[in-house]
Image (cartoon, rainbow, N blue to C red; front, top):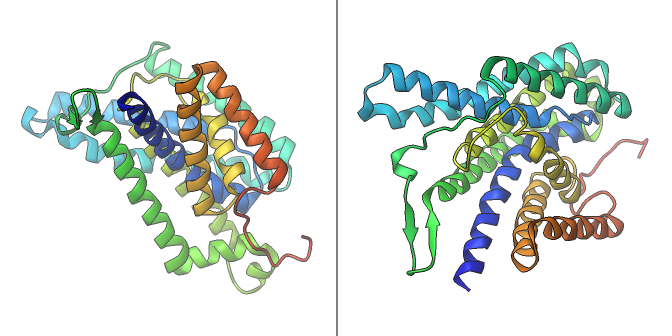
Amino acid sequence: MELFISQIFNGLSVSSILLLAALGLAITFGLMGVINMAHGEFIMIGAYTTYVIQNIFKSNVPEKFFDTYFIVSIIMSFVIAGIFGLILERLIIRHLYGRVLDSLLVTWGVSLVLQQLARTIFGSSNVSVIPPSFVDNNLKVTQLLSFSYKRIFILIMAFICVALVAFIMYKTRAGRNVRATMQNRAMAASLGVNTNIIDAGTFAIGSGFAGIAGCALTFLGPIGPTIGTSYIVDTFMTVVVGGVGRIVGAITGSFIIGMGTSSFEFFTSASLGKVITFIVVIILLQIKPKGIFTISTRSLDD
């Protein structure tokens, strides 16, 4: 039982990372209708940003203040990944709205370019990030059951990010404009909403949250140029299962994918557990083709 609880807890931390990555993707996918296969590379950018900042602190900051690097890393992972996302949206993505197949192929090519860029700068070998000392321990519950502070910290990060996105989307004018554009772009534009700015800003923020997910991933093991590729499929499944454009959908989808995979792997094996998860997703999509939670729309085309 202790081993099963530990596996469930690990599944929660995986769900948290998927949620961080899916938060922005759920909104941008629903807003723009673009399949961004380079979204995983924003996770990679966030992870490498954390690695670089760790090295800067290691060389220039007294040891007693070294742990503060991670606070800076969270902020900078969001900013750097957001800047990359903004550049990608302005140069490429904005020309692909409504062209789903084209967007899939082009962003897949962009992902390969970003991976090669990472290999050129950091090398093809994986690198490690030293976790802050305040999370480098375990919360011991019983002699056999303990919870890693690293994974607890990831859960807290995910909770804070979800609360922040929910506040922006439902309590601010900018969030209202985003939701209006998702429901009916033409009507929102006719009422004075600058949909170009909404697209660019939302894509940048979504990319930034993927960067935070990459920052969190450095807790769990070494990072490399293809680290985002390992999560992009699960992230898209999270968005599609939960429902495009809905925060509650991203939460539900990440819980189903992360917890489901961990549970199935516990009772079977890693490969078979993944297969069973895919089967569950297929069944859910047969029942709810648009996801568990769908966004309401006022578009006459629907």
